Amino acid sequence: MVVAGGLLAGLAVLPACGTMRLGETADPIVTGSIKPQPVALRVAVGDAPEGISAGDWMQAKLALEQALASPDKAASIPWDNPGTGARGTATPIGATGADGCRDFRIGLVNTAGEQWVQGSACKDSHGAVNLSQVRLLGRA
Figure 1 (tube, rainbow, N blue to C red):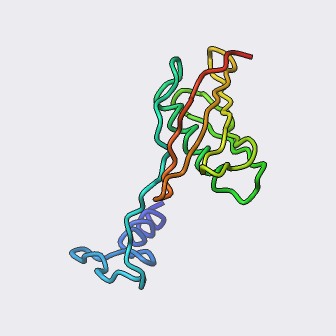
Figure 2: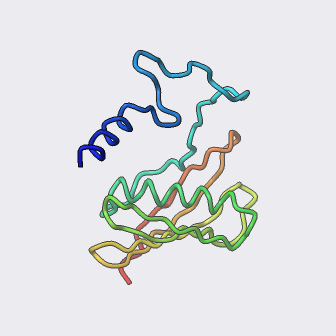
């Protein structure tokens, strides 16, 4: 028993591989050749329809931006808001018109049930998406 206790005490003072010695500081060398750049997340501009929370609408608009940017003309991008439990899909409808606008439909499932939002998404000369004619179609 005494031998085992002495052995454990001796092992406790041995440094483990990769540990720092008392008084050492972390290595100040930073690796990488690319400077970090701030990223701006583009979100479509447009207020949430009555009855849709701002957080759910933000997630839906992010999915709509992805769907509109997709090379797949029939893209339907899922979205969810873990904070509220709401989820749905954002789907562009039809082709982009000469005016740069494309209709869309957003499905939303939350504690109130299933709802549909429809509107038009128009890109301006800077590539920003502005939502117009946004309306709640009703509950399914």
